[in-house]
Length: 503
Image 1 (tube, rainbow, N blue to C red):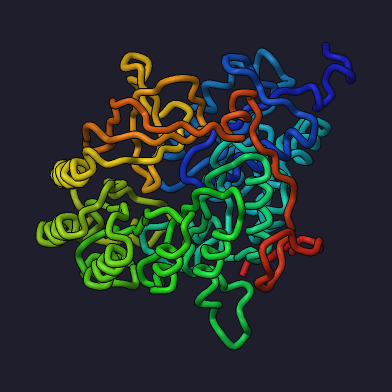
Image 2: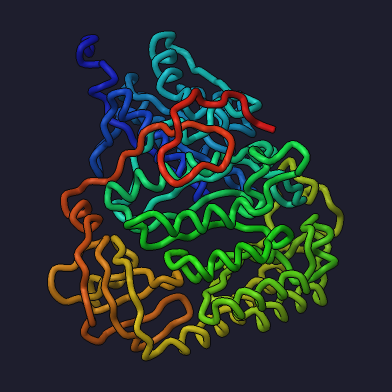
């Protein structure tokens, strides 16, 4: 039996397993920061962790099967080591609640999307009481930025500008699990960006379920939101010395405004890349999805972006086989792909999300039909992407060198990096190039999902991010408060975090 001294949490190792979207990836960084502040240490690769945390997703129909299958695989390890703990958080935990411990009674802690900051306390309580602790809140306990974070990357960082969503798309369960939109003050966002940059980070991605609705939480009471808030935030990022690249995801076509395009085009460190979810090219299907825009509106935004930034890379999300989708509806989606010329499309076969209106709609499309349409869509999108990528052969590109990024890199003796427009490029290195460094090189070949640059690189700039990667150091950001207003760049005046701030 372990002594109390041996069982102290500061000597316990942890592993966080993340499923789903970028929001979950960033939440996992917060969970890692909380655990390390509580004395846990990250488990080394291949070793058994004393604590395994599942940060779950509920977007796909089979998400629960995946979770419970993974929990089942851990049961023998739990039986062999009763001191081991298992925690389940995220969207599926928010949805299933007590069901998790009923299906997997060896789980120690279940927590939701609104109280990730409670994890260390719940673990201690479960250890002390020798029983599972389930705590699911209905509103936000504290904005995630009030929690410490242990970042995954030395050179690129996620920064959340809002949580939750006020839209009511019939296929999406996110609003039910993440709550109404709550925004951070711009000064808090910029302070977190500055904190990352001061530790060598070169690229930041601003995160929100609907970034261009940003401003709802600190608007004038007479207005629905500060309509210019997101454009102002992008412009302010341009004033942060050392911040070389700014990206954002995801906007909503219904609320996308011209001032955001102007800010993108006129702020040098904002990348010429736009991820604009289409979902369907059929106005009839968009109406059934409760997507409050139509095809012409979507294509009009694309035209404006390309007029301001001719070489911008535009990517999208598309759902195939939404209930009631006809062949004519599907052909309209293919038509938008031909006209919009997407660099990449994240394509999904429609999957029922329990608890969403679409799951109960009539005329569910047979799986065989969905699969056949999906394959046609993939074929067209890959053709379009290849043609667009081939236009860049011979062009000079600046790459932020990535850690990994190519399954065949070892065999081809290449490294990988991202161009400013977000395209993945596999290049031939020379000299001592580290992830986090910047290189310029020439594109020599193209494929639908990547570019190849096999000529000698033109230049190589060693960076503080590359130094940090070489030393195995990633940034740690400390809590940054939540407040209202639009202050200047820099750290805001400290003030208490807003509690229970879901709207």
